[in-house]
Amino acid sequence: MASLSILDLVRVNEGSDARVALDNARALAARAEDWGYKRIWFAEHHNMEGIASAATSIVIAHIAAGSRTIRVGAGGIMLPNHSPYIIAEQFGTLARLFPGRIDLGLGRAPGTDQLTLRALRRAADSADRFPYDVMELQSYFAPATPGTKILAVPAAGTGVPLWILGSSTYGAMLAAELGLPYAFASHFAPDMLIPALQTYRSRFKPSAQLDRPYAMVGVNVIAARTDAEARRLATTQQMSFTGIFRGARGLAQPPIEDIETYWTPVERAQVLAMLSRSIIGSRGTVASGLAALVAETGADEVMVVSDVHDFDARLQSFEIIAQTG
Image 1 (cartoon, rainbow, N blue to C red):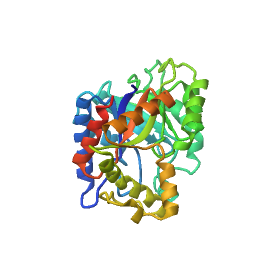
Image 2 (cartoon, rainbow, N blue to C red):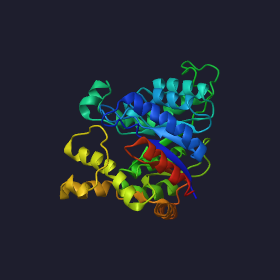
Image 3 (cartoon, rainbow, N blue to C red):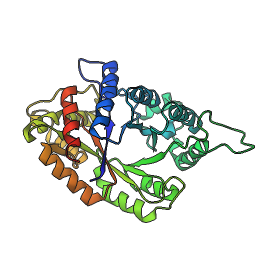
């Protein structure tokens, strides 16, 4: 069985606030390492009131300080939004504080809308420089050499492992060319999963970081004692995705009994297409679904999103998923 890891969206629920979401994420990480999860990642999203992980490096510090062994990282930092030098300083600092536990996943998309992109003071064409920015970032984590004029203190020599994130073959080709591990976002963009993995593996070039391809697959998994209860819990995520198509990304809502009363037929088709690789059910159902996913993809690691409204139910979901390994 592939290793299991977690992507936590740090969802802010209706009737709650960002502090509760951040402390829940910290509590989840502490439990997850006891259950055997390999890593927990947090994503950079801006101008979304329902997600509290915009200041991703600070969130990572909060989570790592509340856990002992689990790897903590970004899944990911949207590099076009930032100077590579600043990201090196931030993650180099994290690596000094939590040695051997920090990951840096890098994405090319802005993770926000064009208006917010301007507020971030980044040019609209920043994504075009993504490959060069990745290589620049790599150089800052390498050991300093005599005569080096620019040091990203304290990043030099930390060798923070980089990952390329993607939802198309673009990221797969870049990860292969640079010899980096690759994480595919099939939890919201499932269509290109298999072509992207094939591209990555067929074009992979060994590097100082990695001698063979290493592929992670992101997937939505919601587990409960029964299939019916898991399907009810999944309505929270289905409503959140419906909000994307309505242009109304709000706080996470509690589950409802009948999702068909919430969305239109067109919204239903759109959301289910994005969530088509979701695995929802009891322990047996989830175990079968994960085994089938790994068999189909050859994934070295599965990164689980379990977007459940109630925190105790979310913990139970992750505990059940861990028991399938």
